[in-house]
Picture 1: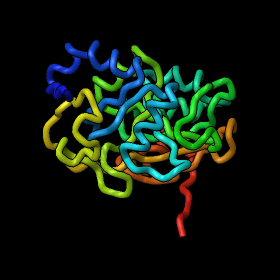
Picture 2: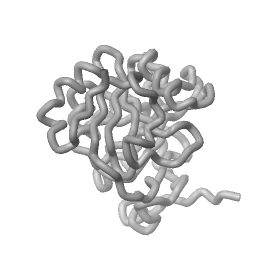
Picture 3: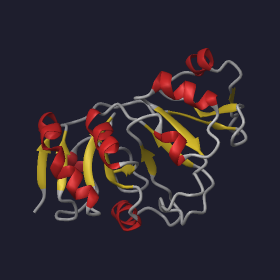
Picture 4: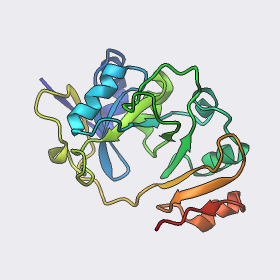
Length: 218
């Protein structure tokens, strides 16, 4: 039977959530403006369950949440100093960074290991940060069904009763801006580009990396 844990007491009951993730389970918790599925990024069956719960198409990659910026060095390949500078300024927060995975990583985020990049973030969530610090990189994805908008309360989570053992209830969540997305133009080189402008403006990013460019979408 599913257990619902109020957000305000979740840190005191974090051991339950950790145990569920470590044994390959998926949990639901709130971050900025949405509820998300969370699992161990290195457990391919757990990541697969996230995609099944969402009804996501084959080849879709989950995002990755880490608990500290230094983890980028371990999971990424040739991380430019400029990426680290922007991360230190805006994490935790609504900044998503695409990096190339370390070739030594044994994981499948749902893309069969085919994609040359993956999205990583430290969200503004004390609970999720603590889980990632204790467990390691976590796979995350919207808890709404694929193609739908953000799940801003537990009633909008796509999982059926009994499919998730632990829900963290943060109540109705406010509408949140999208995260700003950046990447290296060429992996390992300092030239960066903004793929999407969201909560963090291009001007704010350029205060840290003046040379960053904006991808023009047709």
